[in-house]
Length: 630
Image (spheres, rainbow, N blue to C red):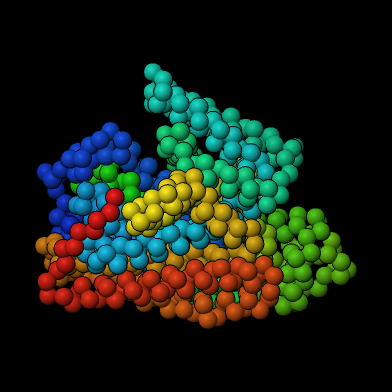
């Protein structure tokens, strides 16, 4: 099968569901109307509540929700085979993700642009408000850890991309100043943004080509920590908004080029999927240990299928800018489908061109004396019956070993994720580079640098957004201190202190380099957040909105399915994966303890919220509690 077919099938699926399922949610469940004024108009303040053009808001929303999740998650899940990965992505998109994103946005719109945590407090009680915000804060720590690792790992492998990314960050300051503080406005800022992107890409390519920068993983992580604290604390117009605006150009270009490349290859009868369609039910994925596809898949494929993080964005900033209720379908529902398309593209490029990318990355690692990679290749060689040419690492027949691994589904399922992780996931951008080269003749190195830039651009957007949201959640949780001890509150709730606490904990976890245990903890907490959000909006839909039985079922069914799946998955994770890392000692154990504590707290808060949800759904009279928060 060719990768281009996956793109065409995915596009057809998304279009059909948008105009059937999506419109049913819009008109029969929510009852959206252009006559009802949105908070952007009713509460207009020129700062947060500002009506935006639907297409501009769609782009902004997508740039905000799309992080490393829809890219890295599917790449890891290929250990189960490309078919299970893409089927879960599509299933999660059209039955759960779009329902979650659209209703979280519209619930916020109907509640004056309030956060999903506030809405939980309104319908489930004050305990729910504090439990929800606590859960959000712990989940965001893992977002910072997971995305911090991914960015630092890729920058340490593709130095030119890191240089280009930070040149863009510095130039974003000039773009923001031009947009907001000069008479040139958006037109002048847009022109400067385009020029800045071209300059950054050119310099990044030159740096990579000539090897001018060689920073380590830890050095990049420290730079990222400083940047994230600044980005989370400075006014949004100074850095976040102009950087997101610049990123949007890169992100749309990356999607268009990647999708078009696979379709062009399909027309040329190219782009054949070389990775196994299926491997085994319990491939070595989570923590590098045997992991059953169900219920473990939501611990791996996060944002590409569905994501609780989206509800924080939709109810945090997007709902305050929605000009018409009818725009919500494109922004919320369409935004989730676009993220699904991104994940579909990743599965296609990886399954078609991941093999040469793995060979190239592994060959370079062996040549550089990477003992860990060489040891893994020796183990793979032994299982597939390929002997090293002379027993020395430098003599390993890398291409023969990896080709044999891909031809043996069980061996692929056992070693793929572990090997790709040892190569710091450079296989992801390299696969994209090989795709552009095969379709358009673009230099592989240039394509790889561009891919690393757009991949980390997604991740950087979510990294600093997560840190800012963690600050907000922390400050809301400390509200009771305001009256009891104002001085303590003023210190702990200070925006710089709140940002430093979240970033320091998240980056410290990333520094342990135990990605295969951090990522599933992040993904699980994120996926569980989506079920808690669905439960919250299901109370609103079932008891406060006039809708059909089918409409209620479309919300309640995915909420229950995700809650059961992810709760079981996290319990399995705590019982099976964490002890393995604790037994290893060192940084493995430190990371194991940290994520075990965070996920255990998350599970406890999750059970409390589930109990409150069941109580409210069974109540004859719906609660109308108003949460007293700022």
